[in-house]
Length: 412
Image 1 (spheres, rainbow, N blue to C red):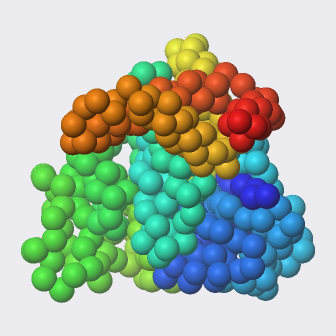
Image 2: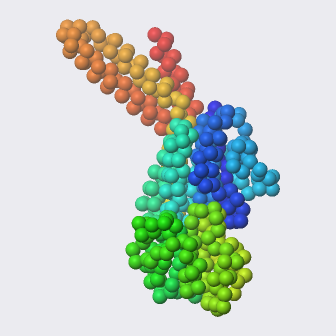
Image 3: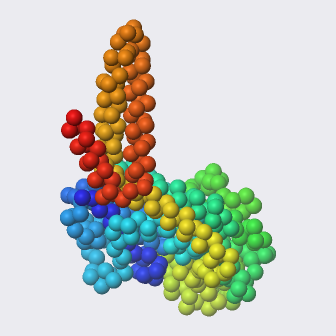
C-alpha cells in the first residue's frame, strides 16, 4: 500500500527565527530530493521551501515509517535536535491532500488569498520532476492542486489576487503614519519579490532605487521608472533614504549593524527597514541604532475578518472540497483502472466473437474494418459505464463490482 505523507514547518507553528534555519537553497533542495527519493520505500517526493514554510511531500510505502524521521536522517538538517520537532507538522493521506489543496489556493498563507504560493507550488513540483523524483501519485496530486488553486483565484477570490507581503507591508506602514509619496526608497534585490516591491513603491509615488549585483548592471532589467545602483554601493545611498526594503534569496546578510552605523554616523534621519527575506537579510541588531525601525516578514498579514473576505473564503472552500473529493476518488481507485480497462477490452472481444457469423458474408477487408469499429466502440461504452460506476461508488463497492464482472466473464 502507498501512503501520501507530508511533514513541514510554517508560520503557524514557528516564527521567522526558527523558519530560517530550515530554509533551502536551490542546491540544498536538489540534494535533499535526490537523497530522500532514493530511500527504500519512497516512490517520490516534492519539496516546497518559501519565506513562510518548508514542506516535504512524499509518496511512500505504508510500512516505511515516519517521513519526519526520514527527513531528519538524510536531509540537509540531519543534526535536527528533538526540541525542534514540536514545530513540525505531520500529515498523512487525506489530511495531507487537503492541506496541499488549501495551501495552493492561498488559504494557508500568512497573506490569505495571495497568489505567489500557486507559482511556488508549481515550481516545486517542476524541480522534483526534472530530477526524476516524482511519481504518478504526486504528479496527479500536485497537478490537481494547482488546477484547483487557479479555479479558486478566478472564481472565488479574484479580489485578492494581487495581495502579497509587499502590499501588506505598505498598508502596515501607512497605518503607522508613513506615506511613500515623494519619499526616497531603496530596494535591495532584483528578483521577483524585489521587482514587485520596487513596482509597488513606484506606483505609490516614491522615488525608487534598486540594487543589482551583475558587473554590467546596465544589462539587468529593473522596473520602469526606477534608478539602479550596484549592490556594493548600497551603504552610500542609504543615508538619504526614508525606506529600505530587502528581498533577496541570498543566505548572506545585506544590511549589517556595524556597516550601517558607520554609514549613518552623525545622521538623525528616521528610517524604516523592511526585511521580506527568509533567511533574513537584515541583522536584527540594526533596530538598536538611533532612528531605525525594523520590520520582518512576520509583521505583515491582511484582514482575515472582513465580511467580503469571509464570503469569498467560503466560496473557495466549496470549490476545494469538490476538487479534493475528485482526487480522493482517483486515488482510491487508481489500482482498479487497469482492471476496468481489461474488462472493457474483454467485453469488446466477446462482442466481436459473437457477431463473427453475421459478417462472414462480407469481404475480408470489410470484416476487419467492422470488427475494429465494433471493438473500439464496445470498449469505449463499457469503459464509460465502469468509470461512471467509479465516480458513484466507494472504492470497496467498485472492487466488489469488478469482481462480479470478472466472475461472469470467466464462468462462461
